[in-house]
Length: 138
Image (cartoon, rainbow, N blue to C red; front, side, top):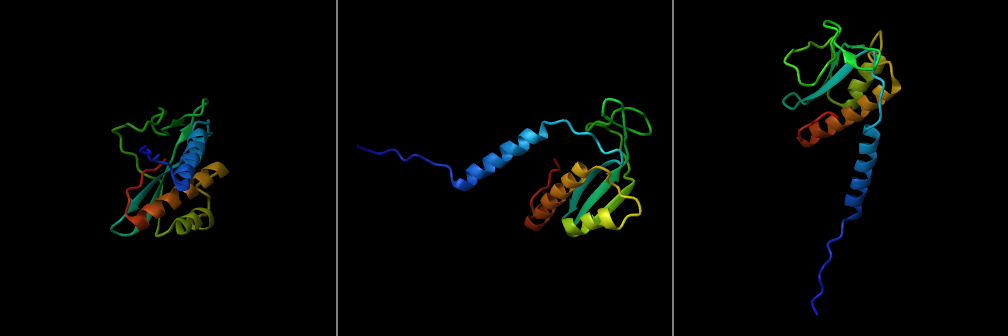
């Protein structure tokens, strides 16, 4: 009798699925936006650097990010090009993290959850810089 080989998932693949499930679940929760603004993180592979651009926003009474110039909610799909109010550059996540938290007269982040998010994203971006992968910010 011929045995059918069952393809089993490796412990690493199972762990990756568990971690993704946990992250996906936490991503569904409501978060209060940081009134200091939001960051867009980018890579410059040619210069081997991370870039964190800080953009201003206001927050309306239901928690949406509002364009300070127009008073309208900010959307991801807009033709209007906004200019950052500050740009932070560095070769590592730690370098930018230190610039954000130790080198500024006024901290550009006012919420701990925002700072933790930035740390995770900068570390993810640094890993993409090292491996040459494309970085997509969560």
